[in-house]
Each structure stands twice: as C-alpha cells, then as structure tokens.
Length: 145
Image (cartoon, rainbow, N blue to C red; front, side, top):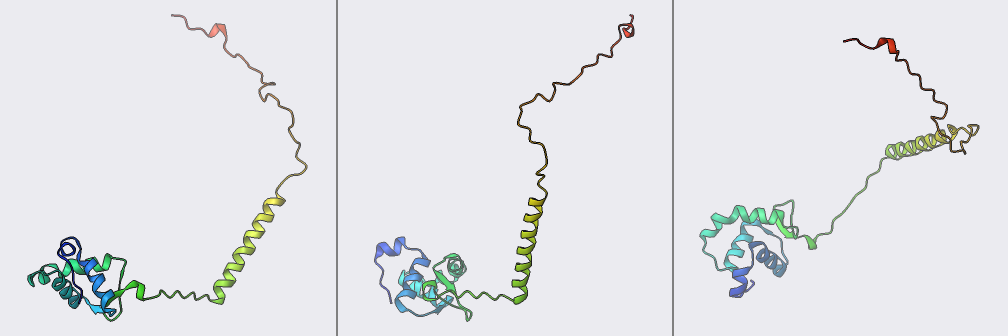
C-alpha cells in the first residue's frame, strides 16, 4: 500500500495515484478495486466511489500510461510490449509488382512522346509582330441625331 503526504493527496489526480498503486504492486487490477485503493490512499470518503467511478474509468481510458487488458484488468502500458504482425499475401505482393511495372511503362511512354524533331525557338520573337489591325468602321455608318 502506498503512503501519500497531505500535499500529494491535495495535488495528485486519481490517475496519478492509480499509476503509483499499479507500479508499486506490479499487478494488474480491475477498475472498481483500483478505484477503492485510490480512494483509500487519498483518504477520501467511501461515498466518492459511487460519485466518481465513471470519471475514474474515463481517466484510465484516456491516459496513455494505462492499458485495458482483454480480461477487464488494468495494467501499465510499459509492462506490455506491442506486437506488430505484418501478414502479406502472395497476391498482395504480385499486385504491388504489377503496379510498379505499370508505373515504369507510363514513365517510358512519357519519354517516347518527346518530339526530338521539333524546331527549337532560340530567338526571342514578338508573337504580335505580323498582326494586322483592320479598322472596319465606316464614317457613313455614323448615327444622325
């Protein structure tokens, strides 16, 4: 059982105390039992159990230091290693290889579409140089008022 100073009781949150309890006992524990130990360690009245059990559970769920095990017990996440399994099917690998081949073919198509025979425009020319402006207004079309 952990002993808290009065200052610790006043400043620590439920989840901090729960962390210390699990760390000290080095055992997994169910939510109601853990909350009862927290209340006892913080010297709170027993009525706090029925008022705060929901909030306590929510604290544990959102606190990344804790892990909820399959059997309903809480433990510290540091006591459990995360096992990552990568299951690759042969079909998935073949699909990835086909995608790579298609990307390579698209890149080759881009290279083939390049026109080596196109004239190179080295000179800076004015595209409007040969533009002819036609004035189609006729003086006889003027309106008489």
